[in-house]
Length: 546
Image (cartoon, rainbow, N blue to C red; front, side, top):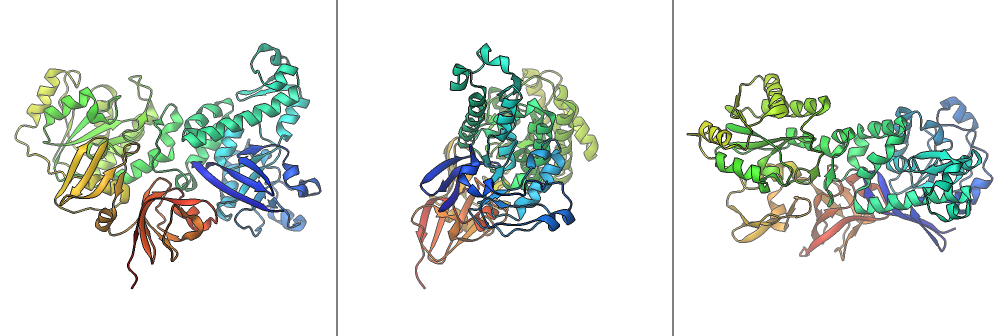
């Protein structure tokens, strides 16, 4: 049996790809008669083993037939290779034990090649398959929905309903038109997976997922436990071409939000000034394009470092407002910030002010934002000045802000230093850089030679070869001895900087060529995978032979 498995797109740990078995091809994630793909499933007798079984019991009764899918267990180390299909029997028993499910699943994933196809047997339903795909499963069978059929349950993405619901026009599938409950339930599962594939391809799967998991608390718990793991951050892209929709309380725990805050507090290098002004956010992004922020910048006239308070990101310095997700998020505007939002924003601001002590911190804020800023100032042990006796955009408030900055020197802002520090973790100290164009079409030049441009859809810097020469370390991918003729595939990658995530700009280094491009995989996946595109190449430069 000739079998290959390749993943072509990802959204977090959810992924789409193709499973080829002989002449047949299946789009992943996929649901169907899995035992027709893997005949060994018809004869195996290991279904009595459960994920919760003790190590002694597993070691005593474990057997292996050498067939696909390869059976794995937390208490048994099985040799796996790229392209294998993987099964751990009875995982449906852990759906209502989210902490255990996540802990055991990630332990197995860490010792498994990234390009293996994971089969979740026995429990996939239209209501839970989204969280199962998010957890990293790719193959599903009809056992769960067929059991619901026997129980007389009509399955939809929001849960199961009485069989009588078929006559209420909730679905117009072939099964509903003929009154075949079994056909409907199978169709509903396949239709949900088709929608998931589409969402992953579009880069909107996370927003879709947050809506789907509300049917049961255990699904929400699985998401929250996953969000708190390094594994999820490792598989979350640094930038997306689609907006970041922070529409639920869980958005504040998304890996993108935590990564942004971590980089702000550990990487970001602010301009040289000892005066800061705290400003409210705006609905329009980037903030500087909004009417309110145009008024703020006119009043400030570059006499202070501008810091925008916002949820869920916490704090956005003006000089990095283009960097994803600062210019790409959207939140419901209610005028109310809940306790968790207040705590996270105040905590981020307090830590920032302690790391970067300013001589003066002026709060041009009102309402909840001012209360949060005062809490953060108390934590940081600083005195906060306020310039808002009315709404921040009122003429009296703007005049008060301008007067408060009288006599302060203009900020000497290094053009891209803040952006480079956030994106690459590097302190760029290169004089004479000039910005050409206007957002979103911005190029950075030195001596008329382009060194950076800004990717309009993500706000990320794209270095040219000359730009990479200014960044001495980090974000390198090392390849075998060849000249890339297109995108770089994972088998050609020898080594990669562990900091690299999907969406990062990278410099590709080989004995015969250099290349610039965008990572399609994390560093770990590049190195351990044997199939798939690792880097989308933008430009190649051949090296002269020694």
